[in-house]
Image (cartoon, rainbow, N blue to C red; front, side, top):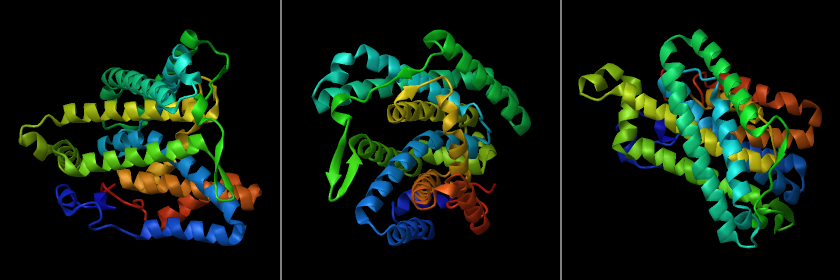
Length: 340
């Protein structure tokens, strides 16, 4: 992907110029190998779509994390708190828009979902701003303190969430027209998973274009390479990075909406469930690389699905084995953006 280039060069070159095809070939090879081993095209298609949907959910959550981790050099172990807050805000919005959620109309269902996404992203962004101002800004440049203080912040947020919404598990239902499955040939694919695939793909394109074809994106990337130079040009790099942290938090809130609707139940620890996978995806993809995050999320989810079907006994370890293999092949990730 093009975000392996230096700032200012790839945006003009277009989306396909300078594409590193090797990681994409790995994903395709994994899918072809799985088809040969599984033997049934319908089963393979079902597993592949499920893997793509899971990969998109991981990408939505991890995309904010890779921006904060890779571009700001902040180890934010409290990222799951924004997922949790986003999920609970979505739960509240869906509860007060029951008429839209239960209507037998795709337009009304999507309107309710869009409201939930907007409120969740806005709430998570506001929390992210406070998180950065109160907690993270004090520990820039100190990774150990970042880990400890962000984990502490996440615990506090989870406790506050339980005080507001209660500790009991909540049930979250999908909007009416997004329930069930649709046939694709001989395969049966859940409607909601198809929607998640579309949302994730659109988000990736928008983020990629924003980072490579806008002035703000180029400033962020240039700030990563040489922050002193950007400051000397009169730009406030610290303010830029605060905005980046807020945007990453909003993305986590968006991911919380997608994840809670997929999960169907809601508890205060929902944010922590995807964090290990999110960190693996960020490392595999290359710190700060949106393209790497996208491809590695798809690769991790698809391989996990295939292995769970073919050899369930090693399903739990497949992701770690994949991580070791990728890092051995490319120590700085599939699409390295920074020099770390």
